[in-house]
Length: 275
Image (cartoon, rainbow, N blue to C red; front, side, top):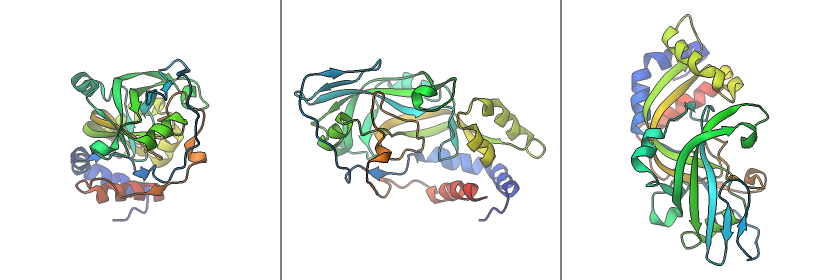
């Protein structure tokens, strides 16, 4: 399968839209899995409880407990899966599950991968500037307040303690998505979808260069993971003073679980970047 032009790609996407949507819905979405095991952390001496910022951020090393506020997913942002999550995408899932999700390491679904105990999960507005973007205006994001325990993982406890976790990713399953294409003449329905959202997308120039995206209206939230490289890079721990991508070494591991036809979806994503 080779797309020489954007028109070739758009034709393929629209003609095979139903099949691709079915494939995306059948898969649990993860970021690329990158291990924290190669990271060296700076030591922090034990002391009194530290609290900073307007979001819950507490250190109690004596008890081996931290509290952190995480931006688990930023909406209205084109990610590496060609998705734009829309405001309220996880609202129904949060109503149904509340805090009955998991805070994990690298999407590994195992007791050994637990990092923290979710205290609160919610969606609310946040400014682009607060997310490190040099632009005015607001978007919406998924927030996780988590109680991180040394007893779960000493490595990840130290990583959060030293403000070295600044990327997160959601494990999720699509339930309602739609294709948006920037071609009014050939694909009026998909162009209408494009017009609905393009003005709100924070990295609009990336979307315009690519010419299409998947608008994600609703999805089921399964877990939130700490990762080194998220598919949506605007997923910090609020209150962090460093950007780990500038200082950490890392290695790539195989995905913890294979999903149906993942290779096809990955190939479409990669080919869309090459034309």
